[in-house]
Length: 183
Image (cartoon, rainbow, N blue to C red; front, side, top):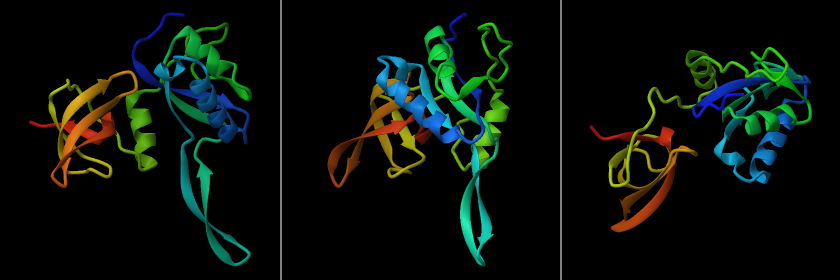
């Protein structure tokens, strides 16, 4: 299998009803296998909140949009493919033609639409910053503040930023999606 250095989204088919267990198992395996956190980043189960009536009362219930599927943001390599493929209750990758062939990633417009429907922020372009650059924080507890980049981790898509709060320098760790470059 050819290793891709790009982080892309893949759909994984699971036994119906085991989506939560598969998500938990993949996240656990990612943390327990050294270096795997550099290949497997996010695991989501697309869901939406629905109001249902039960015993005459309205209750909010989380319902899976694609039953039997989990979405994974990852860099495809032999090792990451093996970890996902051999997770209990995973039946395979969507877009794989069997015999160990590399699966096709989801199209950016497909995953962006799914993430937006779940209320998650979608970045149109990748953040391209270096240590010393000034950035604008666009999401989270420090929204609308500016800071100077202290450290960048492109593998995990995180950065550390130095901010001034209450007259003191404070460091904050942010996801790339929480920051934007200053023009």
